[in-house]
Image (tube, rainbow, N blue to C red; front, side):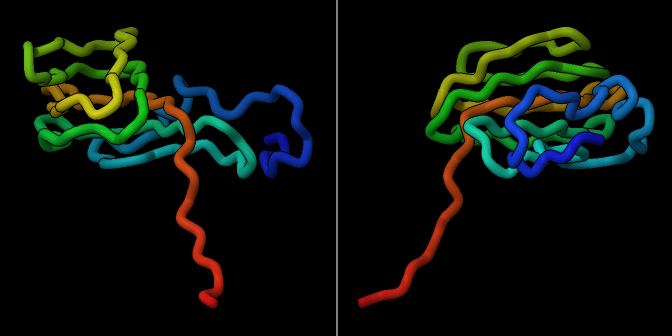
Length: 126
């Protein structure tokens, strides 16, 4: 794999998501991949939810999030309606929108992409 430290700002392959999904455990939960580049403007993760698992209802962060369903099925519950999710679905989650995600009987694997939030840095006090 190419050095992902950010020292070389050239386009390069990060991961083959088809291979990542094929190699992941069916009962894996949470982030099974995240963007390994240190200096970047975007953040990205591959999230795995086993069958029937969910991300509880919450208000999203103060930034827009895009998800791309890679494998499985599920449902996105919003204030207005339920959105069916299946491989290939590309979904926009506006900032601060209410959302809940429930994995279907095959589980659900999806890629998230959003602007990177700056990490909290603490400095000396005066």
